Length: 470
View 1 (cartoon, rainbow, N blue to C red):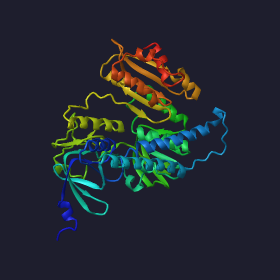
View 2: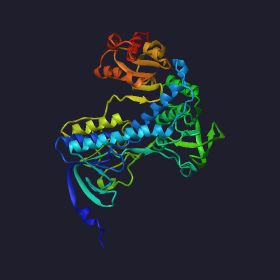
View 3: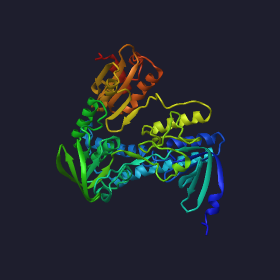
View 4: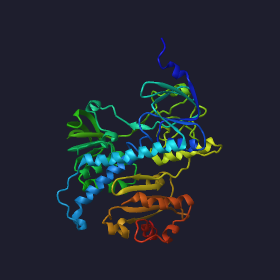
């Protein structure tokens, strides 16, 4: 006896482009190609616009800004403002975030309508090359075939095989951004970007916070002066760090009382708290979507195997964003779209040699582009180092935000900038000026001699590049 939806499944619908996964890069791809008159469909399991505007980048920065405001209230006397009786209303913090997300969803849906791209909410999987079966929320099924297909299914939080972890029902960043209460004691597994941002944010809301990381430094791949500055920041804000540690066992349940047995330097210790957040890496969403039926191969780490043009092993099938092993940033997903866009229209755009900026949205922010000192030394690249404390930046003094530094690596036998790092208030807004100079191949003196508005943070590039290099 046939399924009631079998006839629908057999009705093949043809598109110029079918996109599996509605992340930022793929969403822009849909709007772009549909705007050019092509028939385009985006299949997305849950989120309009993917994770960035719903559960990741933008909601987290919304929450972190609320935490920054809370920190200003606590520092009120420093600014001549007396604010007695501070109370953080977490339901209101969450409501502000939800309102932003709702507005973004409406904007995205309007763009789909304006461009003519079709947004399909449902579960998609390949059933043959360039052909996907989509199960809709009502159980009905559609069969879509694309002349070209883009896979952009992203990644998810990795959960290690730690005894008791699954039973503890830990938070990931998704649940952490939906909290309507301040955790009494938040334990965070992982000292990477997500773990550090949320640790500081929750601490500023009033939580006691403990960060556990297997490495000997937070963000251990960064330069030593960066990791030292971050360690000092966390110490000064009262965030406990347990480093060179591995979690051996977890008992009880997050939200009430959770206990971790941690091995550190050959000894076991117990860490107890009320909530547990897991932020120890990401895993690609490549399971159960029929990639083997599409001829799409995976790398050893489970990411989709692509070449420098972002072509998969299946003709006419492309992959972009995190699932393709690209650096895990929305701005890289957007550039991946540009690569595929150009290649689909006869170009030869590759991902190699891209200048990719990074920003950690702690307060102060850590922003960098190009080579770090560690990377330059590892590659045997000589450099001149320019570095100043943020106290030298006059705008930072007006803000009473002088923690941190600016530094730049400049080639020895020339004047090109090799890398730039800002551990500074709004460091992510300072960095783009240096990145622009690097993309243009301009000498560092261009930034030193520029007429920057006074007083601004970017004006700090003048004392930076006027300092004596080492």
